[in-house]
Amino acid sequence: MIEPGKNIAIKVPLHKWDETVAFYRDRARLEIAKELPNSTGFVFGHMTLWIDKVETQSQVDVWLEFFSDDPGGALEQLGSPKRDELEPLDGVTGHWTSDPAGVVLLVRNG
Image 1 (cartoon, one colour):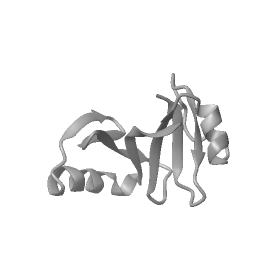
Image 2 (image 1 turned 180 degrees about the vertical axis):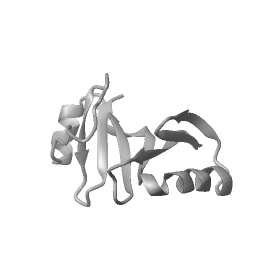
Image 3 (image 1 turned 30 degrees about the vertical axis):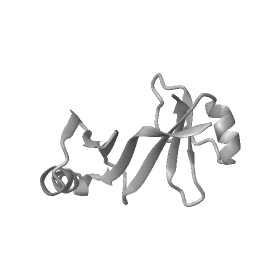
């Protein structure tokens, strides 16, 4: 079974990061959940919307999180490629993958 996770990440180029964080903080008036050197998380209903600064990024990407008791089985169900080279999983049991349009998905144990 695959269920929505708790995180949405918008990967933003360095030159647009400050402006994008200000947009969600000042215009959309979302509450800041957590601030890290290269990422600001906002309360987004029951989820966290992360605005991540990516120095080598040239365009914006949206990354989504899914939970599954069997991440490997979920990857098979989705028929999606394993893309674990995208970003370290640091203690997370799961896999990076993508949908046919290229949206990056984290399928992780939940």
